[in-house]
Image (cartoon, rainbow, N blue to C red; front, side):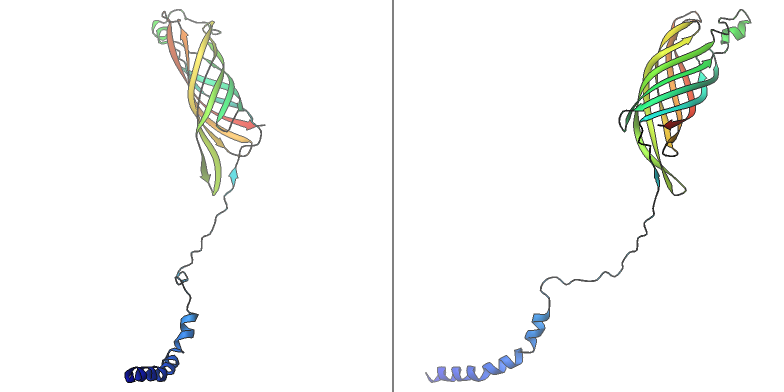
Amino acid sequence: MENWHRVLLLGRCLGPLWLALLAPTVPALAAEPIGPATEQPIFEPQVERRDVAVDKIDTEDFEVGLFFGVMSIEDFGSNSVYALRFAYHITEGLFAELGAGMSQGGKTSYENLSQGLPLLSDEERELFYYDLSLGYNLFPGESFIGGKAFNTALYLIGGVGNTKFAGDERFTINFGAGYRFIATDWLALHGAVRDYLFNIDVTGEDKLTNNIQLTLGATVFF
């Protein structure tokens, strides 16, 4: 019993001393934030944003333009071609096109070698075609010139029509590809290549001919 009295007496004497020793550390512990410490970033990046003006197609869906280039008529050489095209943009990617063009065939290799009578008259050498086609903007994108962005599109196109050549009307299938460059919100520049396929029997056999056409042109939206 005497030992217990000594322990209690010692605790009463040392208790105030421990409180006096711990008192300065309690406010310091309370002042420290609980949770992960927030650190200020060493470097603060300064990103300068560049304003880029983008030319967009006008709100109208109609497009009309003139094209010129070269048409290689199988067996009849290559000559200039002129075309008029009218397009309606059904959706952002799909469009329908009505086109017409004219060219002229030259002399065949047989006529040049034989020096005989011509196979066709001058009037029969005149070629005129019209067609209805569907096109699709396969790869729409942008081109940057002088800090300005221009809308562009690589498109595929194909359709059916009719060709008047060598004194007859000929059912024609066409297919090809083109590149459209939107210069302003109403003006576009085009480069296109197409193959016009139709049957012809002028040289003695009825065969399917490939007639390649390369054109450049400009269209307006309205």
